[in-house]
Amino acid sequence: MLVVMDAGHGGYDAGAVNGDRKEKDDNLRMTMAIGRTLQSCGVDVLYTRETDIFIPLIDRSIISNNAGADLFVSIHRNSNVNPAANGFEVHVYTNPSMKSIELANNIIREVGTVGVQTVRGVQQSNFSVLRNTVAPAVLVEANFISNAEDNLLFDTYFSDLVENISAGILDTLGVSCGDIGIGGGGGGTVGGGPNVDTIRNIQRTLNNNYGTGLVVDGLWGPASRRALIRGLQVELNKYGAGLIVDGLWGPRTKSAVRNLRRGDRGNLVYLLQVALYIKGYRTALDGIFGEDTERVVKEFQRSRGLSVDGIAGPATFEKAFN
Ligand SMILES: [Zn+2]
Image (cartoon, rainbow, N blue to C red; front, side, top):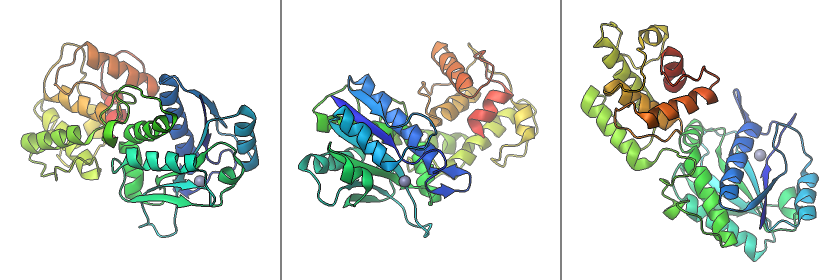
């Protein structure tokens, strides 16, 4: 079975842009993550692009048609001049095949409301990649790049979105694959993104320990991020750091960070584990810096271009908390 994964735009075609954020980059990141998930489930994947290059629309269909793909999935971010517009939708052609409708419905169902403000459902569109591709084809608009909350959801629930879109594709292929996308509720093992119940627990813990007054809604937003940094500042002050507990990351907080390493335990370790978890690194949130946490810290340091020593100091904290 072969799925063609198509990252929208690329090269000089940035797609929609919001500040420094370019649609082409989000598209590629999500496309590659879905592709890797499908491959881990034994499905062959062909990418129309794997780097930041321009590919004409018609060539994307030709790549799929020449390869005899079973399904074609194009990944985009939506955009609107009205910054309030938000949500997740999947497009099929104006004269869609039954299989493409099935694929679109499966993706919408699996994704559900995890990482999604508004379920906009399946829409029919006369897009080139839908019109010219022989295989059943859909175009996913994964949240609006023009909406701040949608971007936050895209980042926070990235792994859940990847996993659940992948589950919709696998459903359509009739491939069952482990824990992926069960019930659209996240919490699978591939990708390791935040899950709503875990975030609720974190919010509760922050409220209990630091009086942060978060709404326990399972949604990791700016208030939760700030509460996490407040917690860090409170903990560092126990060592005489004398920080203002304002929940804002700055050079004073950074320089007050204490090195955490294997064998350490306590609230600082917990807060580090939470910060890494939110960044998509799955680790126990138990306040114990064991083998597992050390491995995750190393993985994180590698991904952020830090020296990979497994000791979490100011530089690692800055990447994890800021
Ligand atoms: Zn686009």
